[in-house]
Image (tube, rainbow, N blue to C red):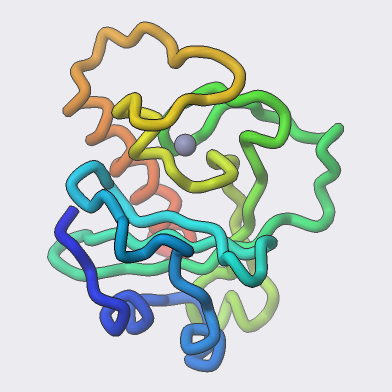
Length: 167
Ligand SMILES: [Zn+2]
């Protein structure tokens, strides 16, 4: 993806208040972000580790979503050890259930959607082999890297549809 500036990132969020958008922390090493290796920008809040964020471009517009670690789900109840976005298998806490408030009125009423995702939201880097899962190698895939990257984007977009109430 193209390199993004702090201002446009903060302006992209669709499911949190302006106050939350102002307060959120950018990735710890924001200036070192490997943009060309990213299908979307995902990170955990360095100052509030139960929070995570994903920002992606779709139809020419930036869409950011705020996520939070699900407090209800204990690790023992974790149902998946495979990321639903990038399909990387991870050990134990490598996959986490994050929930996003829905955009608009539904979210204000407490409606959320959940997502099993790599805990550090670095999906793009696992697919490209720039980061290794603690557990295992990725599956041997018959898809090309480009096709896998498209799948990451497609899966994330499917989740965005749910957050935006378009699913
Ligand atoms: Zn992932």
